[in-house]
Image 1 (cartoon, helix red, strand yellow):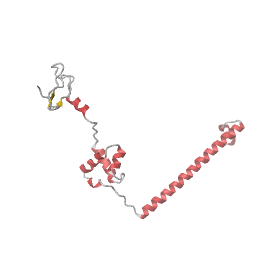
Image 2 (cartoon, helix red, strand yellow):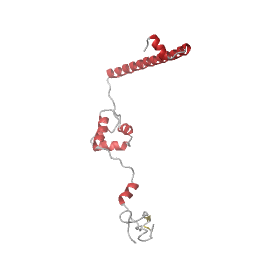
Image 3 (spheres, rainbow, N blue to C red):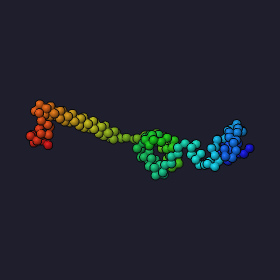
Image 4 (cartoon, rainbow, N blue to C red):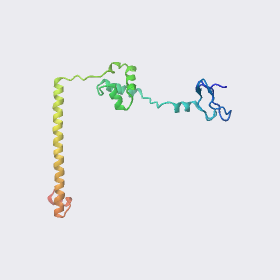
Amino acid sequence: MKRCAGLCLSSFVLCPKCEKDKGQKTEDRVCRPVVSCHEFSPAKEKVSDMRKIIQYSSAFKRKILEEIKNGKWESASEAARAYGMHKQVVYTWLDKYGYGHLKGRMYKVVTPQERDLVAELKAENKKLRDMLLDEIVAHRVDEAAMLVACRELGTTPEELKKKDGMK
């Protein structure tokens, strides 16, 4: 009985070209069936058995860590979610690159003036959005009225605009 060539601890599954001794059981294990010793490639076997491995560049890692440090993301989990990776990957980078103190939840300290300014800007933003919406609705009403007038006059909007000197 031959031993497997480093792939497992059980007996070696022999090639059909060599001997027809496939799947001999020893030590409560069965060696993987090999199609042919002559075509066998350990690298191919490892690739098919392994999970997908993604390697990130150190520049990319540093970019994410700087974003966490600068407060773009409230936590490492949020950054990982944004970039579509598992949160443990980012936590590992935090430890490896000396940012372990950023593992916990980060809190933003806001002064009362900043809080008031944010509230004021949000209110102004809402007011401007409402005004824009009103203008869009008014424009669409004008366009619809022009189409109705054109139908009644038997003309096209372009001809009507030329007659009135509109652009």
